[in-house]
Image (cartoon, rainbow over all chains, first blue to last red; front, side, top):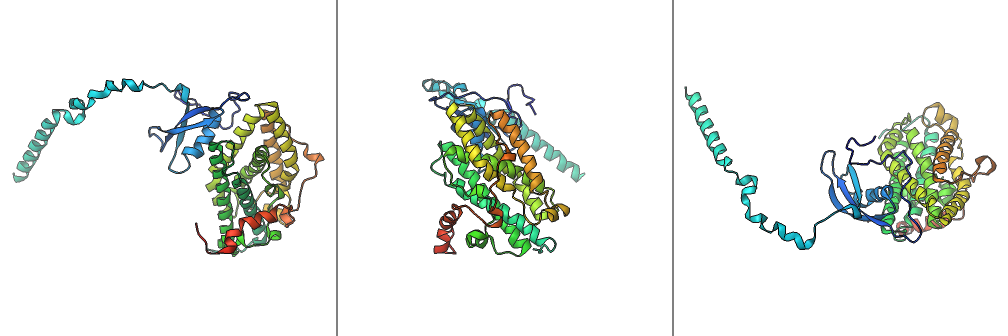
Length: 130
Length: 257
């Protein structure tokens, strides 16, 4: 079955789509591998490998990265299709740790929730006494 | 475990040939460990070889638990060469990678159909095992298809090598389907469809794959199949293989690792 997500290409084991051809003396490209532990879980990057095409990358990834732990599905992406930030630009994240107010624990609302719960408990115990 | 009483001999014959095929091809293919064409393929091919040894173990275990035969270690390591019922295809040396890939293709196309049919076997333990290992065999076919297609479409040399390997291996591959004494009984009791029917389906599937890959299926009507393995007549290669495989076991029968 084709993927319902138009961004994802799914391999059909029965089909015979010609793979990209590798000419003589050409090095195999590397592919990045992402495995999904169970249905619905996010795919996590687990490593890379050499392969002559997407099909072969999936064949090799299955044994390379999917043979030990639980595995439900695998993605392979050509390494050249991954875009990353420059290491020198990591300073963009430097002040993250100072911005605690962006963490959910930082929200003032938690005080209000605690107060509300307390009040609720109180009224419940009053009802019981009546 | 309850011992199967009916059709004992017929089921034993079926299980022994399947188990011996799996054990010997598993051992042969494991000879590529450390020598594979790339590290990734080395791991994949070795892993499939382990799967085959696992299949052999499970089949020997059925013989042990349901048919009163010795335990899997004894069956795998202590039988005489002539008592093995593997086909000669699996005994042949690994050759170069083209040969090993083609043998893998020919053998696993038959395995896939055999286990698919056995999922409906009236012999319950075999039906259960077939359902269990279905996914593994599916991967073995996927692996064989992708590699053979890739190489057949690569260079003229690669294609020629594959065709030569195919022509060499094909008479031996027909030997997979050497009939035994109990074909009619197995069919009548819905235990197994029989080798003849299996071979027909195998030829069809193979033909349609090879056509896509651009390789030619040798003409099975003009080729003499290499029979004998199922009756205990083997190539010169099986005995040395068994000597090597059982070396550790002979030194220390209780060795574990």
